Image 1 (cartoon, one colour):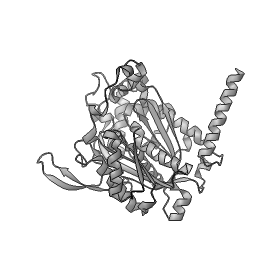
Image 2 (cartoon, rainbow, N blue to C red):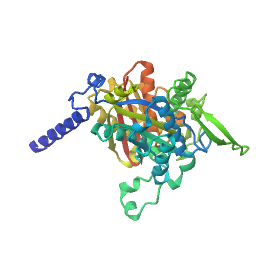
Image 3 (spheres, rainbow, N blue to C red):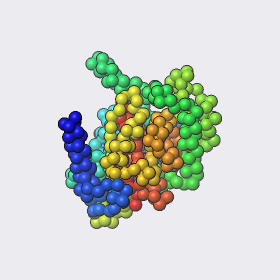
Image 4 (cartoon, rainbow, N blue to C red):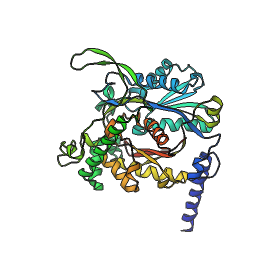
Length: 427
């Protein structure tokens, strides 16, 4: 028992040492420490996204993911005023693109005006890919590997979503129970979880309707306008086959008049007696997002306007069949690392992959639901898989600033059984 206690204390000491290093060596955590400003803070000087449009139907249905990314890049350069030659590395989250999109995304960066000296990579951590891209860049800056970088996400679910996105499992993987669970479709997983965790359809539909209603109101008030970079694209009219040039300036998946009662009439999608359907799950969507990161001292030297800072992130594994619980595990982990109490957080941006899993996480953590996704979420305007983690940064920092609030958390469940979360501070 004494040996076990000793090992536990050593583990806590190691965690403390790591946390101190990641927080700049200050050795202080908690709300007041996070609100302090230091030259080595990893700050965001611009965060934006394209509109998010309906997969197969919306404004970006005929636009390649790399072209969406190009639009996000050019808008980021224009809005921030950054000299493109100062950007050293770009990380792009994407889930469905063949080859990870590595070739196209590098080409998109060059076409947007970044010089050949700016490197670019693609990465895939499923639904958290956009957040992982931002965290990778933040950590590169923190370690001194680069000074300035961009975390981004791009996804065309219109052109790349489908059965071809997952390759066949080998006999080796199929023979391992937990490994085989990794390929169970998300909808079926969410259905199992809803039953296992006792989340009734009525509550799911109520939550989903609220997401639509909040997004409708936010859109009417123009609360998305600051974070959105409009994009002009080619679009083929499905009724006439006429190709048109259109400018997309708002999320086109947001629908008025959605109520819990209207959602209650939709047929379950994955089981006759199930609770998951198209109205209480995230929409299949297209879009892109980009976040410009550097140290505070660098931003001040360059005259870059600081909109917020990255503090810390966590990523955890959970059983593949319970992938939806990811935020309920990842959020406590990042709060522990930063010394925050849940009551210190002003806004929670938790991805609405499914109403069932988002509700479970909110209830399990005892969060104030009024602080969760105040402008709606992926149920209302979509979840372009590799984009959401970067999109949430612009949504969060913009809303924190508007409200005069400071601390926010972004989080999501991740396919194959993971969760990720990050703490951000608005300025």
